[in-house]
Image (cartoon, rainbow, N blue to C red):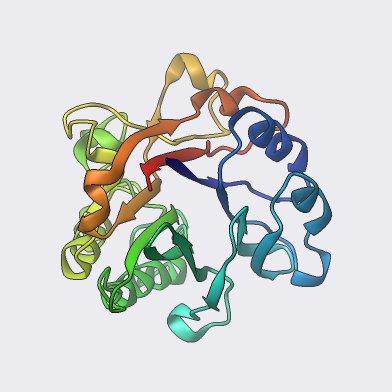
Length: 267
């Protein structure tokens, strides 16, 4: 049986609920993970998600900023919210679901963007991002016994050369600087995480999930970055069927600058 999980930085869930509905109507993921929901918990739009069959919803939000949510067709248990860097931001949520005889911990992250200047001495936002990534290095894919793991979200870093439109031109641009890319790769290595998005897509092939609002014609320019990620514990690698990056969603009405990414697993 195929089981699907979609991750999407929606950039305000209330503003963009129509395109969430458009996604679900067409693709019907079993679990939908959203980032940058930008809404406090008491105002989160639960009703439209439940109307679409997502009866199990856990949220971690705040007014106007950040925010993550997991909406699921299958039961969720043991939900947890980690306050990375101890600043009170709503940037992480996790829960356990079961599929067949397999128990899986699902993490949903929204890593800080880091501002515009890649220098923590003059840009505290960049320092916050680096500290966040440093703390993520403690997160292990094998943290819980008899439990597989999946990590999704907007990690705001394009770690590989072909995760950006121009490796050379973006080396000094936040999201692709060496200190960020080395840090994220170290998160994967230390945690024993497997990059599912690159399992079937060679590292020398371009792969993007984000296109800037600043581009007059984003599609023609195609100056993208892979900021959104799906990782897993190694045991789930053999169960990967395919990954879908829904590029067309960038052209939907009132779009996010990120597009949905869906993993299909034989579970």
